[in-house]
Length: 220
Ligand code: ADE
Image (tube, rainbow, N blue to C red; front, side, top):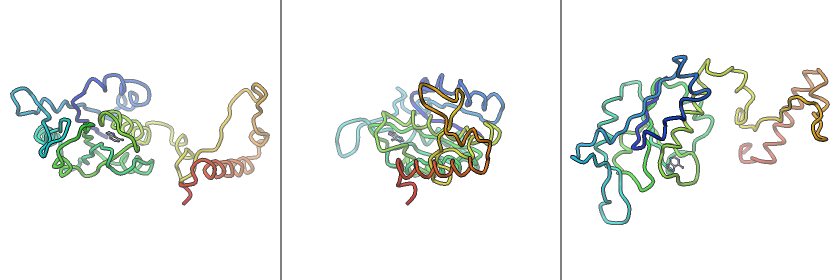
C-alpha cells in the first residue's frame, strides 16, 4: 500500500513513522509513505497557501490551488483521496479495515481555521477521528495511518487482531499474563484450567459483559 500525506507541517511526521510497527511495515516494503508539503505547489510568489474568507470573519482559509495541484501530481486511477476534517464521517475500525485493502491513499490535512469548500470536490471521503477540534488534520492522519498499517496483511500476526476490540462490535475480553497472583489479584481460575471450551465461553461472556457495561451503543 502507498499513502501520500499532504500537509503544511511536514516536520510533524519526522519521527512518528520511523518507529515500531509502521517502521517495520515500511522497511519490509509492505507500506510506502510520502509526506508532501503542499506549500511547494503554491503559485503565489511568497508560497502563500491561505487567505482571508470571502464574506468576512476571522481566521485564514486554505486556498484550493496548492492542494489541487499537489493532488494532481500524485493521483492515479488507484487513488482514494481523503480529507481529514471534524465534519467528516466518524472513523471506526470497520473503515480502517476497508481502507487497509486500498492500493493508494491520499490524505489531505485540513487546517483548524478552515479550508476552501471547493477542496471537498476532489475528495472521495471525509473523515473525522472524533468529536473534538484538532489544530489540523496532521494528528488525525497519523491515527489513520497507524490503524490501517497493522491491518495490512503480513504486518502483524493475524491472530493479534482476530479477537480484538470492535471485531463483531464487541470490546475485547480481559487478558492476563504471569504472575498468576499479583498484589492480591488472582488470574481467573478458568484461564489456568486447560479447558479450551470453557475458556472460549468465559471470553465470550466477558466480552459481552464489558461491552454492555462500557459501550452499550455498540450492541444497538
Ligand atoms: N481536523 C481537526 N479536527 C479533526 C478531527 N476531529 N478529525 C479529523 N481531522 C480534524
